Amino acid sequence: MTGSTPAAAGAAERAAPFRSVGGGGSDPVRVLYVAGAGRSGSTVLANLLGEVPGFVSVGEVRFLWERGLVEGRLCGCGVAVPSCPFWSRVLAGAFGREDAVDPREMMRLERLGTRARHVPAMVRSRSGAAARAHLARMGPYADRLARLYRAIRSVSRARVVVDSSKLPGYGFVLGLLPEVDLRVVHLVRDPRATAFSWSRVKDQPDRGAPGVMRRKTPPTAAALWTAGNAAADALWSGRPATLRLRYEDFVAAPGAALTRVLELAGEPDAASPLIGERTVELGVHHTVAGNPDRLRTGRVELRADREWRGRMRARDRALVTALTWPLLLRYGYLGEADDGSGG
Image (tube, rainbow, N blue to C red; front, side):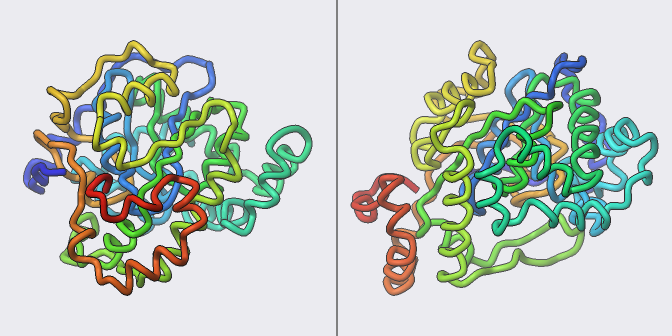
């Protein structure tokens, strides 16, 4: 994926448009949630969806409190989240004023019921009294989330809110909220590609100062990939309003993948933002966190990243394969390592 990074000098100007496309009302907020593991291409998918009329892409909303408000990282518009007009309006609309909710308290409440260790209990409590009990254990967190997503819809005037938070436990909590109509895209990428991505040095400009993203060893990357995808499978596989999408299939045929996602989102007639088969013109999105590629704008070509095939060390590749083979088999990756297809 190629494009240009917004210059800081134009940040205030870029903060102005909120992609007002119609929406709002008292119906549940339609949230298209991208679930799975990190480095799986969720930013690419969310960027594309953010260009669909009626959609608003807001990045990894679960990090609004930590990375956005506590750390003050950049919004996708190039302005620090606490100063971003969009998020200022969202927070004021949700809570009356921007400082009405303690972000550190929200971080604490989130940890009470969204971590991987809670997944077995989540699977047992997907509906009824058990689901209500799970929400009750999280105190005011659920109510505040509902207010937040209603405000996102109100300010953006979008029909569909695209949240690429990925964490299955967070998505599960969203799905329990009566105020949210959750649609889940379980995005999967070859774990060897994600492990290679985690090993590379990559700039992280959203901190507002020079720095690089945190790197992870192949065993750690494999463990995170397995945990994220196994949890998403356990919570949503075979259930309504869920689509499993391989990143490799998405970048090979973006139009076909987009058609499936739009149908899932309840917007089958929405206009595609694709120019030709695989190009999109990216505008500014108010993404609160995520891969630094969310800061890119301009004309972008969607293409497979096959660098890992030629540059990943053989021992790392073999190790990741050994650690992830059950899900590699489940998702159809075994046997694809050297055929030139995919990611």
